[in-house]
Length: 246
Image (cartoon, rainbow, N blue to C red; front, side, top):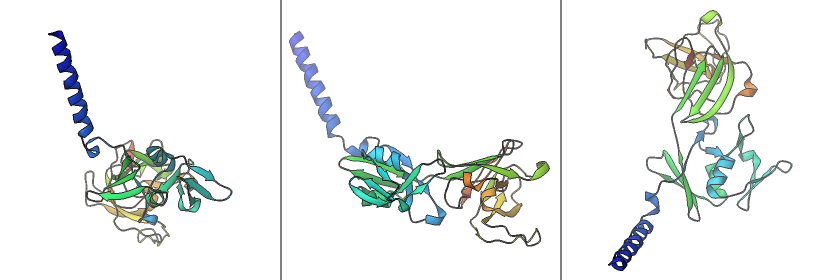
């Protein structure tokens, strides 16, 4: 009797293993990465180079003197890369495809599958948002959960910068002249609408101020993306807006 039970258990284990192996690969959760996008380079989608290479089991080699990136045996010009100010190199999906990956847009265009030799991951486009902490005089911006920009700001003096929720865009202009402040030159301007408690307020502010102020050190700015979306700010602590990146 014990022998029959043991045989039955072995048969059940083999059946379970066979059933698991028969499951389609798509049913297993694939790793995913949140995309990085730029308004000034809107046709390309980026990822941190090391992050993408790890997903594909590639080892990137950068030759700064010759301006070359060797990826999966393919030479790519480093001019094609973008770089965060912390030194993080960003590579486009187009360059991953050039290096041999199969890049396929799926669903409604918000997800892209990147695959090679049985390995794959999904690239997901997420909403953009930003928050300015007035007490710290610091701006932080995200695409989804990915921090893409962090910089100091200089807001209005004596507490004149209002906190609240804002929406930025869709209008934006690299060269703008203020109709309120004696035709003052306001480059990279985006109108924002205050929507926390009063949706009637609207004004034009410099692109990176997010209705709160402007960076005190542009060199600290990490490149980020386009201008549209909703934003959030907390009274007495922060003022926020999303998708205000150039």
